[in-house]
Image (tube, rainbow, N blue to C red; front, side):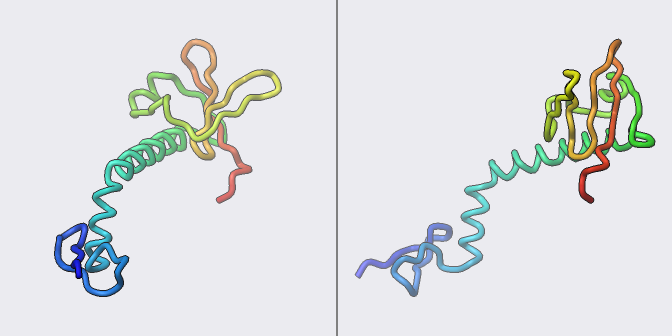
Length: 120
């Protein structure tokens, strides 16, 4: 009879014939290692989105405010990350980070808005 070994620690496996790991600890360690690159990418992206949201929230007074591109950049805003895009009937494009959005105006100014329809 062939004895199977744990994919994580190479210890012999006892029990069912289809088991791959000797314990939950080894199974979790194996899967965490296998998914770490994807998890890091997702974690870093979510952190950057939260940073963008916080910047917009700090600059948005009374559900609407104006700011400059430099003010956003100085705070570390990443224009490449957003959660959705909305086009108005007049053709304007708002870029949203969760419930806060921004519209590029003339001369490097931006209008920041809060979508009050967003659920808490």
